[in-house]
Length: 358
Ligand code: SAM
Image (cartoon, rainbow, N blue to C red):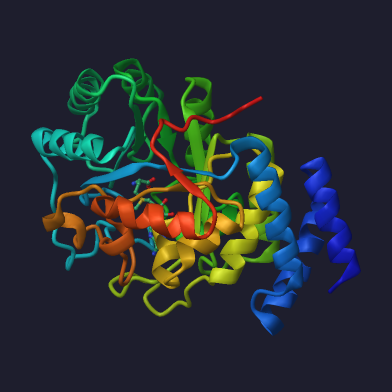
């Protein structure tokens, strides 16, 4: 194992930071190891350090969020995404307010205390529609957290939804490099606005989540270094990362998927850079490997987000090929998820799971 790599990992675990040059050096060493060995000793050491730091903040607890995919209508045309506007094969759906509330009711019964409402940028979910939904969830389930993920909106809109009671907002930055952002998105979308939205969300007091796709087309080690620096400096309360997986009806249909191993070492690095971050082992990670979720938790993640959407629409929220929505991905299989986590020494807990920021 590279002794320089070991030194960098120990330094990262102790100081929770590295210089730009050191971050890049570590990324290159991990990538070199991955290309020859898959998950090698450096990545394992990094994972052990990440697990130890997570235990200091959260013990062996794994938080669950009930994910409700409320609409696959989207005005955007992101090159990677299966629900992009220009995918004519996508069968569109939109849940009604009553359907969303029913998902929450069922989720509450199952033990969920955080509901994540996610959708494409569908302007049918305007401020007043979302305001009513958030209010009603808060009245029906006092003490539960509401997380939103509806993409870029105005400051006024984010403020109105916060006033309605929303607690958290997930908006992946996708990449912290402007030129890379422009390779992943059409001209109508702006890197500067994405970053502006993230700053606004934080300023308004949301627990804010950013994140990236691992192995997205054109992603370089330098891009990842910038992502890690951004995550370290922005100090998000949550950070969603998962492998890029191609979708057959997008311009990136023939691109290669991101890897399990690279996602795992990046999860570990993020845990060490932001020790208290709430870090999900994502559906995409579960999709590329049958034990992806467990391996993600062992590498430093501490959140899972099973799917609470009605059965009839789950297949239609197809962001990438073969996206999981049943089995361990299904909120109805919480007992199975608990057993799988218990088998590797972690305890699924059903409280709100707010950030433990010291
Ligand atoms: N519209 C909201 C937004 O843009 O934040 C929420 C929905 S969007 C589909 C949620 C996330 O899915 C994106 O931030 C992106 O990182 C991820 N995603 C989209 N297409 C993907 C793909 N092909 N592979 C992996 N993740 C993907």
